[in-house]
Image 1 (tube, one colour):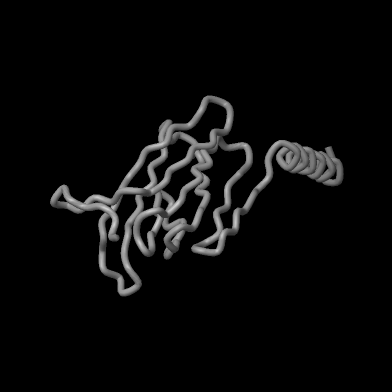
Image 2 (cartoon, one colour; image 1 turned 60 degrees about the vertical axis):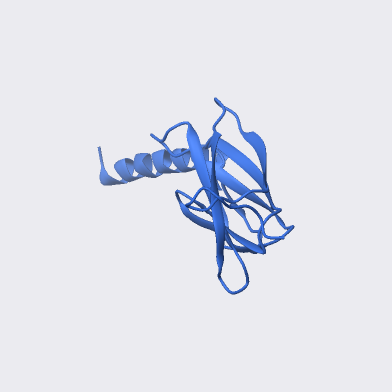
Length: 141
């Protein structure tokens, strides 16, 4: 086999592989303005969590991959895309931290969301309660 034939086979295999990957998967990015854009592969199992800050003047939304939103104002909606990682478990966790404009801590909350088998899910979470380490907490009035 000549080098030319080998290179043609290699390029053909590469092109077929790339075209099959792009036809079955694509990278999607969600921009919402309160933090870094969320990028994920569309072939992953995902849970879209539609959130609303009903508690603190500002909240920070975090997950295992980092910070989703840094200063989400009171009353604002935000959608978190939890993507199931290869070899990961069947749950994703979101942590919310509440604070005021001066950075005074109001408390935090955490919630687990499960991934559906072979499909995407949509869940909602209205952040109405924050807890302090002493077991107390709530939303400032």
